[in-house]
Image (tube, rainbow, N blue to C red):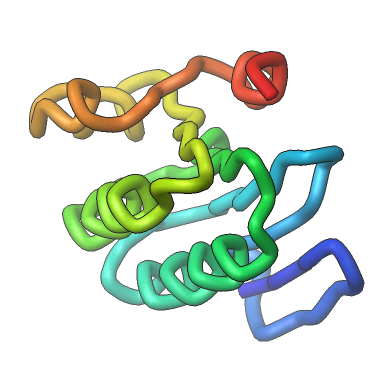
Length: 124
């Protein structure tokens, strides 16, 4: 796992699964890599909480590099959306691995889903 925030970089383990938080202008981007499952979900929660404390205008959760999206990961996406009333939350998801589970669970009705990071940042 790796973690980056606007002020520096830290390394917390392997290269396959990870979460990275970075600042891009007025947006905070949470990039998730690998399997977003029960193992990685607590790290996502921790960094979403950190992003809320940093009080950016937008939090983009980028699932482009996710190769498995479990219910624990989807629960963290919903939590981020519901607990961030002052911050817009956008989820980058495309394809069978990430978008399809969100469609099947009808989370696309609740979450703001965009196809690319660029599309998410264009709205800032």
